[in-house]
Length: 408
Image (cartoon, rainbow, N blue to C red; front, side):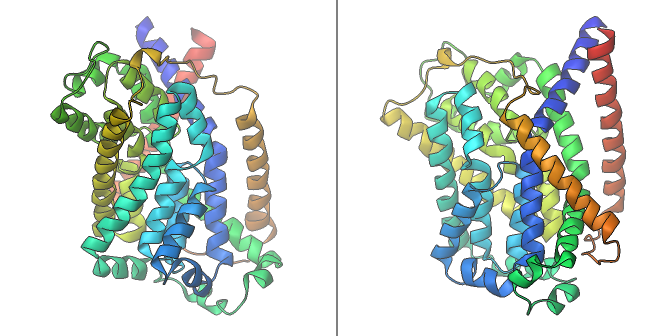
Protein backbone atom coordinates (compact mmCIF):
# COMPACT_ATOMS: atom_id res chain seq x y z
CA UNK A 1 0.00 0.00 0.00
CA UNK A 2 2.85 2.36 0.86
CA UNK A 3 4.43 1.78 -2.55
CA UNK A 4 1.13 2.47 -4.33
CA UNK A 5 0.68 5.73 -2.45
CA UNK A 6 4.22 6.83 -3.32
CA UNK A 7 3.67 6.00 -6.99
CA UNK A 8 0.30 7.77 -6.96
CA UNK A 9 1.85 10.91 -5.55
CA UNK A 10 4.71 10.77 -8.02
CA UNK A 11 2.33 10.23 -10.95
CA UNK A 12 0.25 13.28 -9.99
CA UNK A 13 3.39 15.36 -9.47
CA UNK A 14 4.79 14.28 -12.84
CA UNK A 15 1.55 15.07 -14.67
CA UNK A 16 1.28 18.55 -13.20
CA UNK A 17 4.99 19.08 -13.80
CA UNK A 18 4.76 18.09 -17.45
CA UNK A 19 1.80 20.43 -17.93
CA UNK A 20 3.58 23.28 -16.15
CA UNK A 21 6.58 22.82 -18.44
CA UNK A 22 4.35 23.03 -21.53
CA UNK A 23 1.84 25.65 -20.34
CA UNK A 24 3.38 28.72 -21.97
CA UNK A 25 3.76 26.77 -25.23
CA UNK A 26 0.07 25.84 -25.11
CA UNK A 27 -0.97 29.46 -24.60
CA UNK A 28 1.38 30.75 -27.30
CA UNK A 29 0.18 28.18 -29.81
CA UNK A 30 -3.51 28.83 -29.22
CA UNK A 31 -2.94 32.58 -29.25
CA UNK A 32 -1.22 32.33 -32.63
CA UNK A 33 -4.07 30.15 -33.88
CA UNK A 34 -6.66 32.67 -32.71
CA UNK A 35 -4.80 35.60 -34.27
CA UNK A 36 -4.65 33.75 -37.59
CA UNK A 37 -8.35 32.91 -37.43
CA UNK A 38 -9.38 36.52 -36.87
CA UNK A 39 -6.80 38.71 -38.58
CA UNK A 40 -5.43 36.74 -41.53
CA UNK A 41 -7.52 36.72 -44.69
CA UNK A 42 -7.82 33.66 -46.92
CA UNK A 43 -6.54 35.70 -49.86
CA UNK A 44 -3.34 36.63 -48.03
CA UNK A 45 -2.78 33.09 -46.80
CA UNK A 46 -3.15 31.72 -50.32
CA UNK A 47 -0.64 34.26 -51.55
CA UNK A 48 1.96 33.18 -48.98
CA UNK A 49 1.38 29.45 -48.42
CA UNK A 50 -1.15 28.36 -50.99
CA UNK A 51 -0.44 28.26 -54.70
CA UNK A 52 3.39 28.05 -54.88
CA UNK A 53 4.24 24.67 -53.37
CA UNK A 54 7.98 25.13 -52.74
CA UNK A 55 7.48 28.58 -51.25
CA UNK A 56 4.61 27.31 -49.10
CA UNK A 57 6.63 24.41 -47.70
CA UNK A 58 9.56 26.74 -46.96
CA UNK A 59 7.33 29.27 -45.22
CA UNK A 60 5.47 26.54 -43.35
CA UNK A 61 8.77 25.16 -42.09
CA UNK A 62 9.98 28.62 -41.05
CA UNK A 63 6.76 29.56 -39.26
CA UNK A 64 6.79 26.19 -37.52
CA UNK A 65 10.38 26.72 -36.41
CA UNK A 66 9.49 29.95 -34.62
CA UNK A 67 6.27 28.54 -33.20
CA UNK A 68 5.37 26.25 -30.28
CA UNK A 69 6.79 22.79 -29.58
CA UNK A 70 3.52 21.60 -28.03
CA UNK A 71 1.69 19.09 -30.22
CA UNK A 72 -1.80 20.26 -29.25
CA UNK A 73 -1.01 23.92 -29.87
CA UNK A 74 0.63 23.07 -33.19
CA UNK A 75 -2.50 21.18 -34.26
CA UNK A 76 -4.66 24.23 -33.64
CA UNK A 77 -2.39 26.55 -35.59
CA UNK A 78 -2.06 24.05 -38.44
CA UNK A 79 -5.84 23.83 -38.67
CA UNK A 80 -6.07 27.61 -38.84
CA UNK A 81 -3.47 27.85 -41.60
CA UNK A 82 -5.16 25.15 -43.67
CA UNK A 83 -8.59 26.67 -43.11
CA UNK A 84 -7.40 30.07 -44.32
CA UNK A 85 -6.15 28.66 -47.61
CA UNK A 86 -2.63 27.34 -46.97
CA UNK A 87 -1.80 24.30 -49.10
CA UNK A 88 -2.12 20.92 -47.36
CA UNK A 89 1.57 20.14 -47.79
CA UNK A 90 2.51 23.58 -46.40
CA UNK A 91 0.27 22.96 -43.38
CA UNK A 92 1.91 19.57 -42.77
CA UNK A 93 5.34 21.21 -43.06
CA UNK A 94 4.30 23.71 -40.39
CA UNK A 95 2.96 20.95 -38.14
CA UNK A 96 6.15 18.91 -38.35
CA UNK A 97 8.45 21.91 -37.96
CA UNK A 98 6.54 23.26 -34.97
CA UNK A 99 6.96 19.98 -33.09
CA UNK A 100 10.47 18.99 -34.16
CA UNK A 101 12.51 22.07 -35.12
CA UNK A 102 11.95 24.35 -32.13
CA UNK A 103 14.73 25.50 -29.82
CA UNK A 104 13.23 24.65 -26.41
CA UNK A 105 12.72 21.00 -27.34
CA UNK A 106 16.34 20.79 -28.47
CA UNK A 107 17.45 22.14 -25.08
CA UNK A 108 15.52 19.43 -23.23
CA UNK A 109 16.93 16.75 -25.52
CA UNK A 110 20.47 18.05 -24.92
CA UNK A 111 19.98 17.83 -21.15
CA UNK A 112 18.68 14.27 -21.15
CA UNK A 113 20.23 12.65 -24.23
CA UNK A 114 23.20 14.61 -25.60
CA UNK A 115 24.20 16.44 -28.76
CA UNK A 116 23.73 13.49 -31.14
CA UNK A 117 20.03 13.37 -30.38
CA UNK A 118 19.76 17.15 -30.80
CA UNK A 119 21.30 16.85 -34.27
CA UNK A 120 19.02 13.90 -34.96
CA UNK A 121 15.99 15.91 -33.88
CA UNK A 122 16.70 18.85 -36.21
CA UNK A 123 17.96 16.86 -39.18
CA UNK A 124 15.13 14.41 -38.66
CA UNK A 125 12.59 17.23 -38.58
CA UNK A 126 13.71 18.35 -42.02
CA UNK A 127 13.67 14.76 -43.29
CA UNK A 128 10.14 14.29 -41.97
CA UNK A 129 8.97 17.29 -43.96
CA UNK A 130 10.75 16.20 -47.16
CA UNK A 131 9.47 12.60 -46.96
CA UNK A 132 5.92 13.78 -46.21
CA UNK A 133 6.10 16.18 -49.15
CA UNK A 134 7.23 13.36 -51.43
CA UNK A 135 4.48 11.02 -50.21
CA UNK A 136 1.80 13.67 -50.65
CA UNK A 137 2.93 14.30 -54.22
CA UNK A 138 2.92 10.57 -54.97
CA UNK A 139 -0.48 9.87 -53.38
CA UNK A 140 -2.08 13.20 -54.41
CA UNK A 141 -5.13 13.03 -52.08
CA UNK A 142 -7.08 15.86 -53.76
CA UNK A 143 -10.49 14.50 -52.75
CA UNK A 144 -9.61 14.22 -49.07
CA UNK A 145 -8.08 17.70 -49.06
CA UNK A 146 -11.15 19.24 -50.68
CA UNK A 147 -13.57 17.57 -48.24
CA UNK A 148 -11.44 18.54 -45.22
CA UNK A 149 -11.35 22.18 -46.29
CA UNK A 150 -15.09 22.22 -46.93
CA UNK A 151 -15.68 20.75 -43.47
CA UNK A 152 -13.64 23.53 -41.85
CA UNK A 153 -15.23 26.32 -43.86
CA UNK A 154 -18.90 25.37 -43.57
CA UNK A 155 -19.54 28.00 -40.86
CA UNK A 156 -17.70 30.94 -42.38
CA UNK A 157 -20.56 33.46 -42.80
CA UNK A 158 -19.18 35.90 -40.26
CA UNK A 159 -15.67 35.63 -41.61
CA UNK A 160 -16.87 36.29 -45.15
CA UNK A 161 -18.49 39.56 -44.05
CA UNK A 162 -15.12 40.84 -42.95
CA UNK A 163 -13.06 39.34 -45.75
CA UNK A 164 -12.56 42.73 -47.35
CA UNK A 165 -11.13 44.27 -44.19
CA UNK A 166 -7.35 44.26 -43.92
CA UNK A 167 -5.59 42.84 -40.89
CA UNK A 168 -4.43 46.38 -40.05
CA UNK A 169 -8.04 47.52 -39.67
CA UNK A 170 -8.99 44.49 -37.60
CA UNK A 171 -5.99 44.66 -35.28
CA UNK A 172 -6.83 48.24 -34.35
CA UNK A 173 -10.40 47.44 -33.33
CA UNK A 174 -11.55 46.27 -29.92
CA UNK A 175 -14.06 44.03 -31.65
CA UNK A 176 -11.23 42.24 -33.46
CA UNK A 177 -9.42 41.52 -30.20
CA UNK A 178 -12.65 40.38 -28.56
CA UNK A 179 -13.01 37.85 -31.37
CA UNK A 180 -9.43 36.73 -30.81
CA UNK A 181 -10.24 36.22 -27.12
CA UNK A 182 -13.36 34.18 -27.83
CA UNK A 183 -11.61 32.11 -30.48
CA UNK A 184 -8.80 31.51 -27.98
CA UNK A 185 -11.34 30.21 -25.48
CA UNK A 186 -12.86 28.00 -28.16
CA UNK A 187 -9.49 26.43 -29.00
CA UNK A 188 -9.07 25.38 -25.36
CA UNK A 189 -12.65 24.14 -25.18
CA UNK A 190 -12.08 21.79 -28.11
CA UNK A 191 -9.09 19.96 -26.65
CA UNK A 192 -9.19 20.28 -22.86
CA UNK A 193 -10.37 16.69 -22.44
CA UNK A 194 -7.60 15.28 -24.62
CA UNK A 195 -4.96 17.37 -22.87
CA UNK A 196 -6.18 16.32 -19.43
CA UNK A 197 -6.31 12.60 -20.21
CA UNK A 198 -3.07 12.62 -22.21
CA UNK A 199 -0.96 14.28 -19.54
CA UNK A 200 -2.51 12.15 -16.79
CA UNK A 201 -1.58 8.98 -18.69
CA UNK A 202 1.95 10.33 -19.13
CA UNK A 203 2.32 10.71 -15.37
CA UNK A 204 0.87 7.26 -14.66
CA UNK A 205 3.21 5.59 -17.15
CA UNK A 206 6.24 7.42 -15.77
CA UNK A 207 5.45 6.44 -12.17
CA UNK A 208 3.87 2.99 -12.36
CA UNK A 209 5.26 1.22 -15.43
CA UNK A 210 8.63 -0.42 -14.63
CA UNK A 211 11.64 0.02 -16.90
CA UNK A 212 11.61 -3.70 -17.69
CA UNK A 213 8.24 -3.38 -19.41
CA UNK A 214 9.61 -0.97 -22.00
CA UNK A 215 12.67 -3.14 -22.51
CA UNK A 216 10.54 -6.17 -23.34
CA UNK A 217 8.83 -4.19 -26.09
CA UNK A 218 12.11 -3.84 -27.99
CA UNK A 219 13.68 -7.16 -29.00
CA UNK A 220 17.41 -7.78 -28.57
CA UNK A 221 17.85 -4.60 -26.53
CA UNK A 222 20.04 -4.15 -23.48
CA UNK A 223 22.94 -2.07 -22.18
CA UNK A 224 25.48 -4.70 -23.28
CA UNK A 225 24.32 -4.80 -26.91
CA UNK A 226 27.02 -3.20 -29.08
CA UNK A 227 25.32 -3.52 -32.47
CA UNK A 228 21.91 -4.26 -33.91
CA UNK A 229 20.83 -6.23 -36.95
CA UNK A 230 18.75 -4.48 -39.61
CA UNK A 231 15.60 -6.35 -38.56
CA UNK A 232 16.16 -5.39 -34.92
CA UNK A 233 16.48 -1.70 -35.82
CA UNK A 234 13.31 -1.90 -37.93
CA UNK A 235 11.44 -3.56 -35.06
CA UNK A 236 12.59 -0.87 -32.62
CA UNK A 237 11.54 1.88 -35.05
CA UNK A 238 8.07 0.34 -35.47
CA UNK A 239 7.51 -0.38 -31.78
CA UNK A 240 8.48 3.17 -30.70
CA UNK A 241 5.49 4.87 -32.36
CA UNK A 242 3.17 1.99 -31.46
CA UNK A 243 4.10 2.30 -27.78
CA UNK A 244 3.60 6.06 -27.95
CA UNK A 245 0.23 5.63 -29.68
CA UNK A 246 -1.07 3.31 -26.96
CA UNK A 247 0.19 5.37 -24.00
CA UNK A 248 0.64 8.97 -25.20
CA UNK A 249 3.70 10.76 -23.95
CA UNK A 250 3.75 14.34 -25.23
CA UNK A 251 6.69 16.04 -26.90
CA UNK A 252 7.62 17.88 -23.70
CA UNK A 253 7.23 14.78 -21.52
CA UNK A 254 8.61 11.91 -23.56
CA UNK A 255 12.28 12.95 -23.49
CA UNK A 256 13.07 11.54 -20.00
CA UNK A 257 11.42 8.24 -21.01
CA UNK A 258 13.32 8.30 -24.30
CA UNK A 259 16.52 8.64 -22.27
CA UNK A 260 15.40 5.72 -20.12
CA UNK A 261 14.84 3.59 -23.23
CA UNK A 262 18.22 4.48 -24.69
CA UNK A 263 20.00 3.90 -21.38
CA UNK A 264 18.44 0.43 -21.29
CA UNK A 265 19.81 -0.43 -24.72
CA UNK A 266 17.16 0.51 -27.29
CA UNK A 267 18.69 1.45 -30.65
CA UNK A 268 19.26 5.08 -31.65
CA UNK A 269 16.73 4.73 -34.47
CA UNK A 270 14.12 3.28 -32.13
CA UNK A 271 14.54 6.12 -29.64
CA UNK A 272 14.35 8.75 -32.40
CA UNK A 273 11.14 7.13 -33.67
CA UNK A 274 9.75 7.29 -30.13
CA UNK A 275 10.63 10.99 -29.87
CA UNK A 276 9.05 11.76 -33.26
CA UNK A 277 5.82 9.97 -32.27
CA UNK A 278 4.04 12.85 -30.56
CA UNK A 279 1.93 13.40 -33.70
CA UNK A 280 0.85 9.76 -34.14
CA UNK A 281 -0.86 9.26 -30.78
CA UNK A 282 -4.58 8.77 -30.15
CA UNK A 283 -5.41 12.26 -28.78
CA UNK A 284 -3.83 13.83 -31.87
CA UNK A 285 -5.71 11.41 -34.14
CA UNK A 286 -8.95 12.34 -32.41
CA UNK A 287 -8.36 16.11 -32.60
CA UNK A 288 -7.57 15.86 -36.31
CA UNK A 289 -10.79 13.90 -36.74
CA UNK A 290 -12.66 16.73 -35.03
CA UNK A 291 -11.09 19.21 -37.42
CA UNK A 292 -11.01 17.35 -40.75
CA UNK A 293 -13.05 14.16 -40.37
CA UNK A 294 -11.88 10.61 -39.68
CA UNK A 295 -10.76 9.78 -43.24
CA UNK A 296 -8.36 12.71 -43.40
CA UNK A 297 -7.25 12.12 -39.81
CA UNK A 298 -6.34 8.50 -40.58
CA UNK A 299 -4.58 9.61 -43.77
CA UNK A 300 -2.47 12.10 -41.78
CA UNK A 301 -1.70 9.37 -39.23
CA UNK A 302 -0.51 6.98 -41.96
CA UNK A 303 1.45 9.74 -43.70
CA UNK A 304 3.31 10.82 -40.57
CA UNK A 305 3.87 7.23 -39.43
CA UNK A 306 5.46 6.31 -42.77
CA UNK A 307 7.56 9.50 -42.73
CA UNK A 308 8.90 8.93 -39.23
CA UNK A 309 9.75 5.28 -39.98
CA UNK A 310 11.80 6.35 -43.00
CA UNK A 311 13.38 9.24 -41.11
CA UNK A 312 14.42 7.14 -38.11
CA UNK A 313 15.91 4.48 -40.37
CA UNK A 314 17.91 7.04 -42.37
CA UNK A 315 19.14 8.73 -39.18
CA UNK A 316 20.25 5.48 -37.56
CA UNK A 317 22.36 4.26 -40.47
CA UNK A 318 23.65 7.73 -41.38
CA UNK A 319 24.91 8.25 -37.84
CA UNK A 320 26.34 4.72 -37.85
CA UNK A 321 28.18 5.41 -41.11
CA UNK A 322 29.62 8.65 -39.69
CA UNK A 323 30.46 6.96 -36.38
CA UNK A 324 28.16 9.40 -34.56
CA UNK A 325 25.99 6.86 -32.75
CA UNK A 326 25.91 7.84 -29.05
CA UNK A 327 26.90 5.51 -26.21
CA UNK A 328 24.04 4.44 -23.91
CA UNK A 329 26.46 4.56 -20.97
CA UNK A 330 26.67 8.34 -21.34
CA UNK A 331 22.95 8.84 -20.75
CA UNK A 332 21.92 9.77 -17.22
CA UNK A 333 18.31 10.07 -16.17
CA UNK A 334 17.98 13.39 -14.37
CA UNK A 335 15.25 14.21 -11.87
CA UNK A 336 13.37 17.16 -13.33
CA UNK A 337 12.63 20.13 -11.06
CA UNK A 338 9.42 21.05 -12.82
CA UNK A 339 8.51 24.04 -10.66
CA UNK A 340 11.90 25.74 -10.37
CA UNK A 341 12.16 29.53 -10.69
CA UNK A 342 13.58 29.52 -14.21
CA UNK A 343 12.66 30.72 -17.70
CA UNK A 344 9.64 28.39 -17.77
CA UNK A 345 8.27 30.00 -14.62
CA UNK A 346 8.53 33.53 -15.99
CA UNK A 347 7.16 32.57 -19.42
CA UNK A 348 4.20 30.86 -17.77
CA UNK A 349 3.46 33.93 -15.64
CA UNK A 350 3.71 36.21 -18.68
CA UNK A 351 1.38 34.09 -20.82
CA UNK A 352 -1.07 33.52 -17.96
CA UNK A 353 -1.35 37.31 -17.64
CA UNK A 354 -1.99 37.55 -21.39
CA UNK A 355 -4.66 34.86 -21.04
CA UNK A 356 -6.29 36.82 -18.23
CA UNK A 357 -6.39 39.95 -20.37
CA UNK A 358 -7.95 38.04 -23.26
CA UNK A 359 -10.57 36.45 -21.00
CA UNK A 360 -11.48 39.86 -19.59
CA UNK A 361 -11.86 41.43 -23.05
CA UNK A 362 -13.74 38.58 -24.69
CA UNK A 363 -15.93 37.24 -21.91
CA UNK A 364 -16.56 40.23 -19.63
CA UNK A 365 -15.99 43.55 -21.42
CA UNK A 366 -17.35 42.58 -24.86
CA UNK A 367 -19.95 39.88 -24.29
CA UNK A 368 -21.86 41.20 -27.30
CA UNK A 369 -19.22 40.11 -29.82
CA UNK A 370 -20.08 36.94 -31.73
CA UNK A 371 -17.52 34.22 -32.17
CA UNK A 372 -17.16 31.02 -34.19
CA UNK A 373 -19.22 28.07 -33.04
CA UNK A 374 -17.41 24.87 -32.18
CA UNK A 375 -17.74 22.08 -34.74
CA UNK A 376 -20.24 19.52 -33.48
CA UNK A 377 -18.52 16.33 -32.29
CA UNK A 378 -19.09 13.25 -34.40
CA UNK A 379 -19.90 11.01 -31.44
CA UNK A 380 -21.62 12.43 -28.38
CA UNK A 381 -21.12 9.11 -26.60
CA UNK A 382 -17.37 9.36 -27.04
CA UNK A 383 -17.47 13.02 -25.96
CA UNK A 384 -19.28 12.11 -22.75
CA UNK A 385 -16.86 9.27 -22.05
CA UNK A 386 -13.92 11.65 -22.52
CA UNK A 387 -15.57 14.24 -20.27
CA UNK A 388 -16.12 11.83 -17.38
CA UNK A 389 -12.64 10.38 -17.81
CA UNK A 390 -11.30 13.93 -17.54
CA UNK A 391 -13.21 14.53 -14.31
CA UNK A 392 -11.83 11.25 -12.98
CA UNK A 393 -8.33 12.40 -14.00
CA UNK A 394 -8.75 15.63 -12.02
CA UNK A 395 -9.85 13.67 -8.97
CA UNK A 396 -6.84 11.36 -9.42
CA UNK A 397 -4.45 14.32 -9.66
CA UNK A 398 -5.85 16.13 -6.63
CA UNK A 399 -5.76 12.94 -4.57
CA UNK A 400 -2.21 12.18 -5.64
CA UNK A 401 -0.95 15.65 -4.79
CA UNK A 402 -2.62 15.49 -1.38
CA UNK A 403 -0.98 12.12 -0.76
CA UNK A 404 2.45 13.36 -1.84
CA UNK A 405 2.51 16.65 0.06
CA UNK A 406 0.27 16.10 3.09
CA UNK A 407 0.17 12.38 3.90
CA UNK A 408 3.52 10.77 3.05
